[in-house]
Length: 343
Image (cartoon, rainbow, N blue to C red; front, side, top):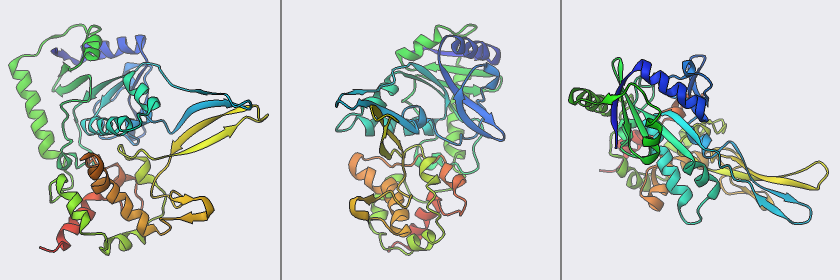
């Protein structure tokens, strides 16, 4: 596949061309924070961002996702979004999270709604320029990514390495002008960017390897930290909603006003919400905040590992930023469990 070097002017021309021909979503500023949004001009694109408030999973699993339309006669029709789009500027930890979501939604009963969007997406990843305040992606093995994207951008000074890894990526590079083959010196600088990411994207240091977390949690079900921290939890669910690897949803039927038809949709849900585990008859099998708080960590650090041998945390740090009571800090929790683990 192609590895090119371009200057920033060529990068801007390329993005401008893509915006003119395709639906492109990229990172834009929202005050002092950053969000993914539809790009209408290249000037709005920010590749120097630290972290977005909401992860790019919203383009594959929207906050509200219509699944089918139905009518009173019993007919129904699947609603499937097939619009191609480009997702521009995805950080490596979010690339890793998307790959995990791909595996989850393809496993067992494949989810055609998610997988169709994913098939129609072209991902342009971008190595981190500015670490965020709470990132610990390097501790989770997600500071860099080798796959899961179509093109990788690495900014090196006033230039950019453009690395196409798939046929989709090669197709995008056909719109690129002013490019030349990346020389050895530039590729060496890219290697240094990757090495720096593995060293510095750890604003918090996890004191074990990620693959040790399932065994740690297996020994910690009755640890007092769950009750201590849950006592301050508002059950707002913010940590779930900003997480790139959370994918729970609720199903809702919405009849039309005349009852002639309607639609069925799914909406984001989260295990920290008080009614998440509420079932028929008013039974709630995680009624207490302690149970919900503990479940979140077990789901990330053990349950998905048991199912797929993956840890459902990529170290983006969004949950730490979103939590107003400062209890949603994976590294603090896991390190506390390690300190108290019998030796």
